Length: 324
Image (cartoon, rainbow, N blue to C red; front, side, top):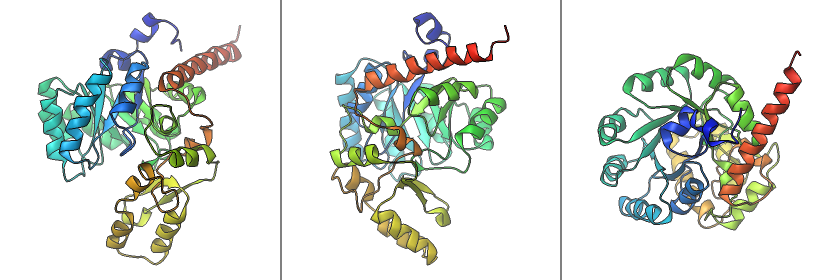
């Protein structure tokens, strides 16, 4: 594992595919991943991502224009396939020649069909071997294998067991996600066979992140048991930091409440947390790695630290395992 030289990084398939300096994708966090954050990560050597989520098309268009004024490096757009505006998002990606798209919450077939002929690289986020095989057949260029340690909507398998199974099942490059916030996580991801990492929660607490300071403070204060998963009974589990909102969701689950009550309670809660700083009744989506986040640093410094520390760990591990 050697990230100290350009020649070494150029041998990495994710670096070659995405055109970035380090094999790192910033997570597509709704309301968090805007043009400012994406540009900071791209300028720092990773691949910055703008999260479309349910963003109104006119606002997303502004973000796509803005990001090009902030960076001349490659950037990406995360498309949530369950969004009611997904058709508009796909067309905006085509209109503005977005170089890379990541997808989640659905089958990326229509994204691949529409955008790959435009030259867009498509990287679906998946949570199972079956999904990985399916999107590879559909024409995906790589996959992000996301374990349940991640924040927001999650699958059922941990990063530790998911990533090597995905690596063994597909020929396209695999990016590991879920629980990665320091050099140890990066080193572990590569040891599992991944060729890159996706990092989300760590970038909530970077200098360029425009999220409300109260949200950042909640992440910094998180400990090992600060996370909780809600919505399991609905079939769409979500990982967040514990607060009054998650307690209310747990009450609904105990009462076997209909899905409509979950939807009513959850409407607008993520924006309330990220934009307005409501840390009691807002949805504080964050991965289990929040407990590893202890400071606020520039995105470029975070990226350098991640790969510097991973390289040191790799060297130490090599020496420890040497039989000579």
